[in-house]
Length: 275
Image (cartoon, rainbow, N blue to C red; front, side, top):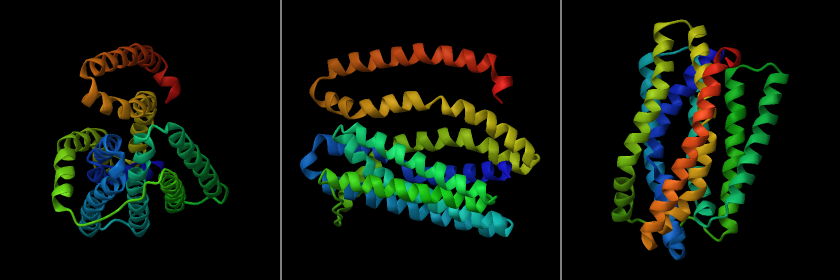
């Protein structure tokens, strides 16, 4: 089951990555620079994200029609897709409190998501549910996380104002495209191994590959958290003080490198025991 779960999450995660296209960075930058127009900026990013989500739905539907997997796998893929698309929209709202540098709201959102995930997944384990119920539990946790993000966004008086503005949507899509392509290819290098193994080897091999890869990916939490916390400040410095921007970015990169080397050594030495 873990092998099938790894394949489904890898497939859906890779396709849904099309919706991200680094739009969060665009939203944070736009809101941080011009908070008076935060509603319009948030609405514009949401429109672009929803358009990309439509492409994802078509891609998933095409895969299911062409591959004709078992019914249980079809249901699992559909639930996983819905779950990912819900948070794809919710993550846009989380950009507001990052742009306002209210990072404690991000912490609360994450804690609520983790607790709800543990509770719902615990219920699935207690009742010995299968992959579909497990993914449904994760979907429920993503719904909770999205509702919390929307609530915090509204608490900052930021509500998406959607109006027809093709030049704005085009600019957002164009700015996010270059970085988005990098993200898609980066995720592709992580996900295609699992997808290829599903068709070339046994499900057990998929499970072993994914378990070892997951351990490594968990180590990215620290640098990603630091980068997200500093991004609003760096966006402002990019406009007001580029010399200070260079100094701050250089210092952050130096300390991240110092932290990452011991972690890599420990993982290498104890990899057999961990996996």
